[in-house]
Length: 142
Image (cartoon, rainbow, N blue to C red):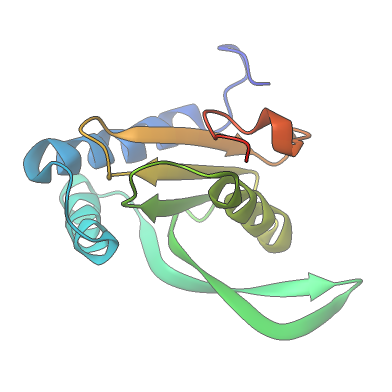
């Protein structure tokens, strides 16, 4: 787990989370994910946070590109995957999704952000962490 001394991309992730907090403060919960994507994109522009929206990232298996891509909601600062949700509760699959995006895309940090609650929920997912299903933060094991 990260400690306060070795937070990966600390300033950049704080900037992204701050932008998401502002969107949540303005809109609250209850909208669909695309509404939050549009609002967060605009907030990134206002704050001059560099981003690419729905950037295609190829999946490579044993050195071979599979020809299939996934699209991260955002890639910020060319190094942080940002995946948005607007759901009642986070489930293990969302954490696994971000972790797999990190592995497939060669990124070290992903931010999983949920606008679906009265308080913004977010989780930092670091590729170098070794996760098992039982360790997903705040997720309920079925």
